[in-house]
Image (cartoon, rainbow over all chains, first blue to last red; front, side):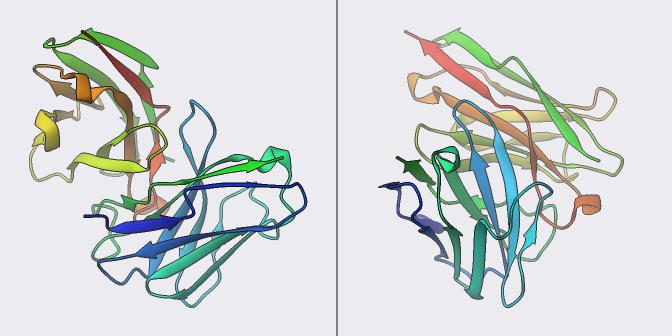
Length: 118
Length: 115
């Protein structure tokens, strides 16, 4: 069964609105979650690392005031795209680390959220 | 820094034929390597991983990959392609120098299966 649940799977909204995407770890407590962005026919680009109970770590070039991340519990991280514009349209995917925090442990991914800004 | 290069953005094979998807990595520390598969409008599913226990790694759906340090490669193979294998495949690397569990992905290879 699914290890990571991401919601919503698809959202269309008007330019200027804010959109919240939820990422839930279903089977275990995730102290770390990751948020990726994927453009059509391209690879995944890591946006930020979400840390439970502390501030997220953003990758270079990602606007932290634009993409707000909250990781208030061990099973839920949220990504809010604030004042969204058409250029923010993309496929957003979250993932969680598994087991102990180690580079040898694979990540488990949600099914993604397709965001379309009109 | 670590990086991954997937040779061939698109690979097309006939059903029943051998599948070979190429991945080369660059890493200054011992790498951990992963292959993921992505079906349309879905997230990524782990196929297999290399964590130094064995150089030949078997994964799900009949896929396997061999780690070759001398060639800095981690190519993905499957002896006989099935129509359900059509998808996007990503090779990824992680390592301690980037922080635990941070992944760097290759560009992806789209696999098409011809009937």
